[in-house]
Image (cartoon, rainbow, N blue to C red; front, side):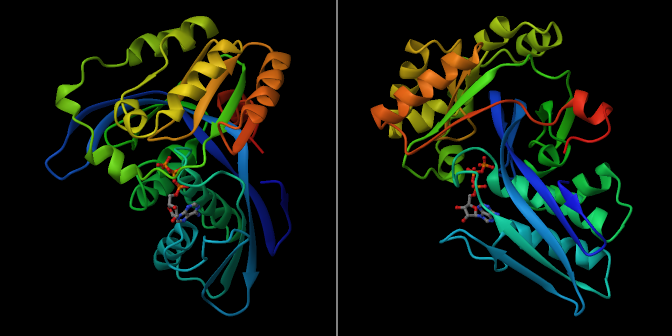
Length: 303
Ligand code: ATP
């Protein structure tokens, strides 16, 4: 939450990256069983919730090409909540979209997660985080993680979550090339049974618990790169660029195409940011740090 009064409330919805992503198998029902290390970064959308007298849901976005209709995950989350808690009042939700779309950063899922938190608070619904996650997974496998945030091990189809110690602090350079990647296409074209290697998720978990940034960076791996990079070699180019500019490691996030590089020093990340923008390999480039996490929640909320 960043501001609040009785009738309005504003909340940030943070993007995520996958520090590591493994796909174990494709299930009979078509879903994929995954093991991933997730991390929220301080690149965010902003949602403002306003109570309205008449019942119903209105969603307004500032992004061309992203309507506020029933297809918007913000609308879907609000609808699920309204079905469970019939309210006398309605809600208007204004979405300022900042997270690149179809980027592998869970932009839609994190907006949905913010709706659960935001409406819970505005209408004092008393939902627990676990109740929100149970509803959230109906919208998308990453929604429960986005509700929780921070550093987490995500298993099952993404909904089985174990909160981890905060990943060691660093500076993250994010670059989204001007291509849209369909998550569905990437998963459909992944041959999980034929992968030559799998990321060492437990190794990364230990590195995080030890607070060892270099070791953690060494475990960064994403099996979905096998599909997306074949289709879009620019991803490999950006990874190479970041590593040459001093990143401890660089990886594609989720199903792509966003690439992130991990830097120990802020000035290195900033320099690489300028050079990457000049190289014109990616239209959207950002420097970010971690967001959310245990330290924040223990201090009484992450906002
Ligand atoms: P993931 O990392 O979970 O695969 P993504 O970053 O690849 O997500 P999103 O930005 O979440 O992809 O959105 C993918 C599609 O979902 C968009 O192209 C858009 O049509 C639709 N969508 C619906 N609601 C939203 C929303 N609130 N924000 C972004 N996209 C949304």
